[in-house]
Length: 103
Length: 162
Image (tube, rainbow over all chains, first blue to last red; front, side):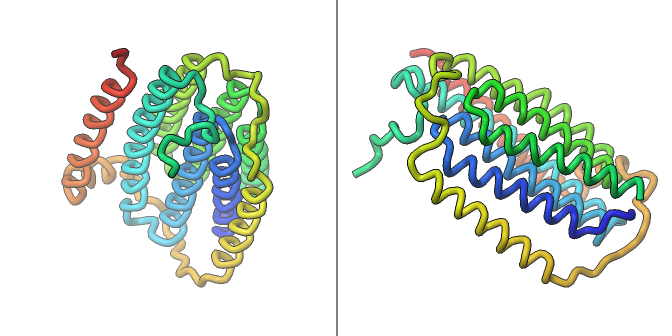
């Protein structure tokens, strides 16, 4: 336990910001989804670090991360199925070319 | 001391891999970098005495989600490697936003006072997680199972050829 909590928090913040940049800046929809996965992982690191340093005897923090795993798996499955479906009709999954919902 | 060196090493490699996943032009390379990030985070979980989550991270993220992403990249193959540009035209605004978010969050987290508790992790941590999932947290556990079932059916419906 020699590593201070703040190191983990700064690491998770940097990872979250990198994922945030990926979500906003990438053109390919699959790359956008990768950014979302990076952000979810950063949140998990934060949850586990807070559990270890603030409430190590109560396992609720770890159980919460298990639920984040489940939701991330569901999100990836549905998101990638959507992209395959879009690719079939449009032959492209670049998010700046998908503008049917724009007024 | 050893723990600190190990943390800095793993954290630096993981962040570089994350940058690679966001910057790489070839989507397949980005997916491989993403696998590296997932592995680095599994190592961090184990450094934080959360062995169960470290193993679950490898099984779920590297074993399932990364494989799914690679499959999706291969199924949309003609965009692989020969994209006109990896970024859309607002990428500099996204960069500024990300840097601003990092500075804001880092400032807030460093300022916030946290009540540290230096206790050891209970030896039967995995038993407690299992009992928690079928005890206190049984309702969210069941809801998560329904969510996964709905996602499974929905993914099949969406990706089906019509």
